Amino acid sequence: MLEKNILTTLAYYQALGNMPLTLTELQKYLVKKEGKNNVPLFEIQKALDFLVNSKIVYVKNGFFYLENNNFYSKRIENIKITQKKWKELVYMAKFLIYIPYIRSVAVTGSLALNNSSTGSDFDIFIETKKDRIWMSRLLVTLTTWILGRKKYKKRRKDRLCFNRFVVENSDLGPTNINQIVNNRVILWRHKQDTKYESIFFFKSNPINILFKNLTEHILDVTGLGLLTEKITGWLQIQKINHNSVKYPKYIFPLQVKVSNIFFYYPRVLEGEEKYKQILKSINQ
Image 1 (cartoon, rainbow, N blue to C red):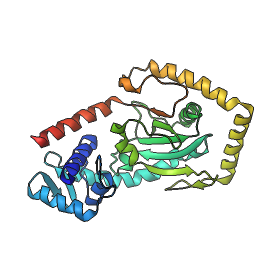
Image 2: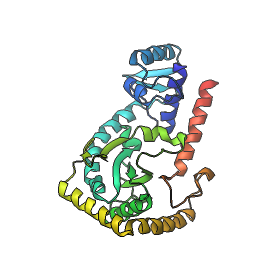
Image 3: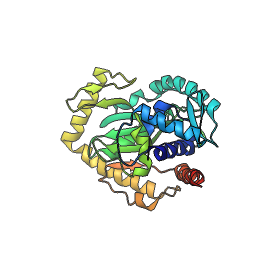
Image 4: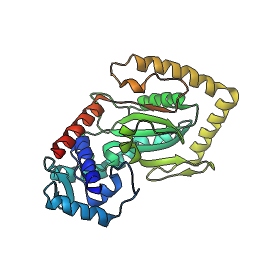
């Protein structure tokens, strides 16, 4: 079973970004449906030894990969690029923590996986207060656009891409895309006792946080927060429903009262198909 999980994991990350994995990365990202949450390294190493000796899995300088995924040199280059991009992310995204109703800011995608290329954007995962998800998304989008940091088709390098909004403490949605979400790196989080926690880089300014809290209080007390949520939710749903991108049917219909908004880009579907093909070739 463990050998199968390892092969599934290597195939998944090959389809995702031609990404050979180290032993510790295999432990961290291991794709499994059941069993232990944290498989000991020695068990993974033992299974890898069997797979390597059987010439099903290959290894180079501590990076494990399938036969048709010898991207070792590229992975090393991407690791170096990723370290530089973390510094850029701090400059590009710190303003998000001061937007009303934002409860958590995290990064997903290639940066979280330590596999960014030069032209990579920043995939951002946002948690919001309950019943404020649409208003939060609008504020995030507008502020990012005003600051000139929003991603566009022809301008994506080091730009912010908001492909996931969820209400705090809610379900993360479809399991087939949660592998990446589960490996997100939390940059900043609002704690229930009103304190704020910097998990990685983002240090909050107390005065700015005070202004944020005051803004939220005024919006909630006056009822403008709930009214704006309903109006902006309806408007955004109309726009999304007329989007040229065709999403899987199970994503719709969107509703104003929702706890999870995500955007299922065509490249995700392409990655899933590639993943299935790799698994099929392994099992032959």
